[in-house]
Image: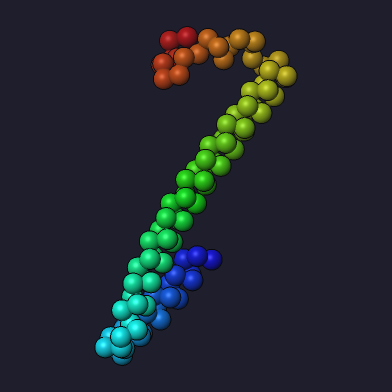
Length: 93
């Protein structure tokens, strides 16, 4: 929603800038456009961070569910996960 709206605003701005650059009100419109672009950029950064947080939470939840299912089905020993060290090469085990 936000990007198409901003694109529409920018297209209108370009159209107006071709014919109305000498209009005294145009400077105010240009200043407001800069503020709008800044706010949309800030909003998109916030949305991006939120999406990343949501994806990390989903991934963590999926891994917990899988771990619980493996334990429930008796396919892994209790405490196995505690023996593993993150980043360590486990090929030796």
